[in-house]
Image (cartoon, rainbow, N blue to C red; front, side, top):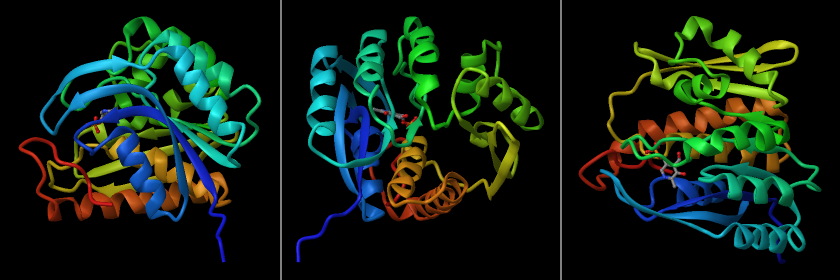
Length: 263
Ligand code: PLP
């Protein structure tokens, strides 16, 4: 019997090293039994130590990919990752105008190895065009600070307040990811208009193989939404999946730098 798995779409950048971006997203979606379609926004020359080059896909080709997928495939949920430029952001927002399903927005800005994945000049376009489309926004602490215009990342105590400020920019819910704070516990906070919906805690695991964690998290949430879960359950299940992927990361020995997590 032919099967019809639920379909999720990732709109993101390629990581030639296979640990983050489109590659992490499609592996994560596949691991959830969800069929992954992918729209490429940029090609990064990248490994576990550095991003050495970035070539953006022309905005009209991003638009054509989105149209090709959405006009044929029954996409149940979308994840947005690296969008790189204001032109790609505009094309993406225009292309998603008629999409009624959930959209998870990972506001990717800087790779762990330090390379910018979003032009400074594109942050305004992200705020204006992408945040209002988001069913869920998943910033880490530096990304959240940048989006609300704070000078630096906040302490975990202030996460719920900053998430409420982000909500005012248009997303229906915000998952603040506290992994960039220090301390033995990583705390994430899920907030919607009703206030704090969930607080997720996990021990900080002693591995350097954390490349692609943010991509994996948002892709797992999109996969759970494609499977029909509600948002709090999707986030909780994705958090669990990510902890397993980080806990198993050292079973992989790939590259000399921050290696990928294990799917
Ligand atoms: N490269 C691409 C193409 C990405 O989309 C991302 C996502 O955040 C990264 C790199 C960053 O990976 P990390 O910061 O987890 O190393």
